Amino acid sequence: MALLEVSDVVSGYGKTDILHGVSISVEKDEIVTIIGPNGAGKSTLFKTIMGYLLPRAGKITFLGEDVTKLPPNKKVEKGIAYVPQLENVFPSLTIQENLEMGGYSKDKDKQRKGIERAFETFPILASRRMQRAKSLSGGERQMLAMSIALMTEPALLLLDEPSAGLSPKVTEEVFNQINRLHDKGIAILIIEQDAHRSLKISDRGYVLAMGQNYFDGPADSILNDEKIREAFLGG
Image (cartoon, rainbow, N blue to C red; front, top):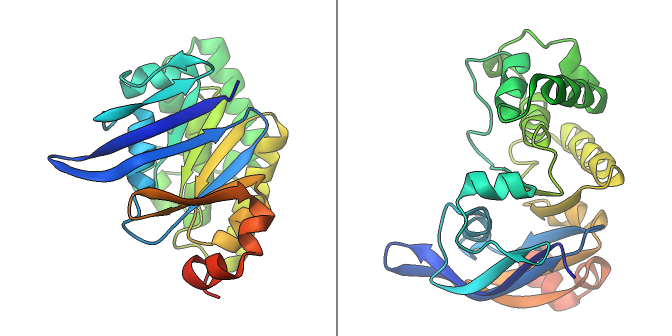
């Protein structure tokens, strides 16, 4: 049984469909990357998985349970966490306060332990716990955003463009941290502009084009496919 199963999902905005029968799955021990050109429907897929958009057709199951029509807060309770590309922290709050917001539904003891785990995972945040999020660098903000999501103790983490706007050095550190999170037993589904880097740490990948499945398979098969490289990976 897959951890996440998205089957033939049709979804979009208003009367406009962006996804036209997309299907993906994520196993409990996997990192999976989704790539595709702008407008392929990648972020729409994440928003549909999380419940911000309701699919017009298709089915979403999580741990074998139909969660297609559940709202976002219920999906978080089930064990799905989402880190959007933009507006993923509370800029006016301190790092400590951001983490407390992430764990608002937990009791004080679980919240405290969650914050301790976050600081163990991202030590750079621990020394700046009273610093406001708006003053953080791009890489630090991304680490805080992931920490906020981890406060919910997810089984599956959705990351939308985690390296967007980051330098190569900081991107490398963010991906090192993603690997560490995976080592702790969290399955990860990634949309990423740096497709090479993301696929290199992934078990499998999906290529979306025009709101449909174009290709899927082991990550290395995508990296080594000449047609996919030319069309989606810059040659």
